[in-house]
Length: 296
Image (cartoon, rainbow, N blue to C red; front, side, top):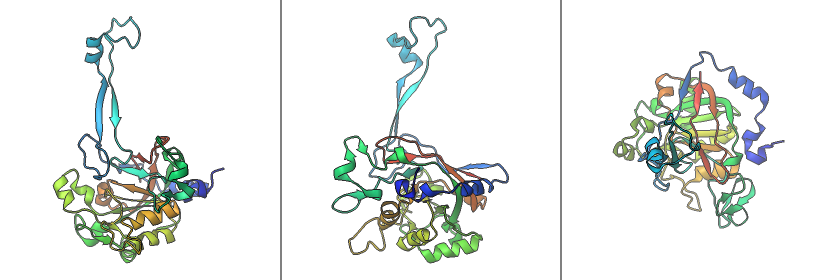
């Protein structure tokens, strides 16, 4: 039996929470929370570029005389297949628990560490192959809308007090087992790289992360490439550039999503919904591209 310690708190998701989340669906409408991925798309600069390359085409099959089905093909049947070469952290994605490490031993959640669990083919402990499905209540906290702006300013922190104020203004509560999506407005600028650069990177600070932990969420995401505010206003005594990732992902097994497209949810003022995301189980990967949906 899966326990919370295996895959984070989401491992303890009770069946009645799944049933309760399904009951949030009233209209049967689905809103995508992911933008299109394409070669040249904006990405966090530490990641490799997203590429789609042809491997087989009808013309290539004909020119090379390939016979993928054998010699009989009087109908001239062809097909197309491609390589998708990309980081699993391309566009809307979810970090696996093995994504981030900290300390001299380079450890991550659940006892993983580089010396024991990192191979030439990726981590063996809590990699993307262990990522669970998410089918639970989702909550949107629209920070940009709350401030009355299209997009938060560059490096603007969202703290716990503001998270509380947004909940009050929107008439929602954050509860155990929730997935909380936080909108800065950044994806409203997509894919204009210059405009996006002028607004990097607002997001929750360490007080907001503690606020989420207190409410026992199982995952959280923003519409930016780094989730948390950058540079960190409070890197702590160790000078940690990403204290929010450290607290949520490494220390507590709370899954983090980035580059969510929250614009349509905000436009329709949808603050509570059924959240569905199905990570792709790839051994050795440190995350998964996801195309999550809000069902209302």
